[in-house]
Image 1 (cartoon, helix red, strand yellow):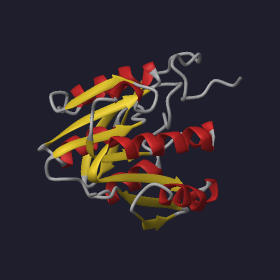
Image 2 (spheres, rainbow, N blue to C red):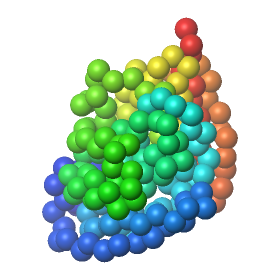
Image 3 (cartoon, rainbow, N blue to C red):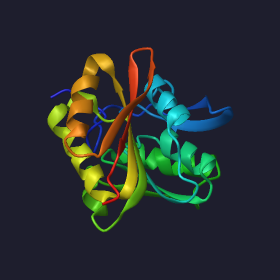
Image 4 (tube, rainbow, N blue to C red):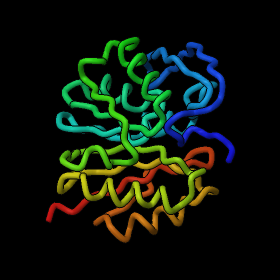
Length: 202
């Protein structure tokens, strides 16, 4: 099986370096490495997700599948009164995410944990969840993440998803509509969709 970023222990040789990224007008520094998603720079989908997501003024935010941390770390900067939890399966990515939280001065605001989806967070509830899901793992895994996110959002909470139209945007929207009270396509750019799914207040 070809090694990819959705594995606990990437088998590829290390190749660590530092990149910079301008996100919502602020410059961030990130350490990246081989064996993690988007090692050459923050990918367009994650950038669009960061630019588009409406973050709560306070509460609990989850970055689901955080990689080396750009989405969660950006959330911690742009929603300074929120607590941000970041989870991933990839241990190399988690190591980088911890270093990157330090590098960008947000380590006190974020909690970074190893978790396959939300399996390590069963006792937690979130006001907002953001995800750039691992499309290459297949719909079964991606839709499981949607279901877990729904269960652990607070009533009235919101899931934000970035997905490419050609990689299943329409079917992902339909899947979300089977669970969530309202699902909106809030942004379309360069073939990427940003979906916002609201959980019922009931």
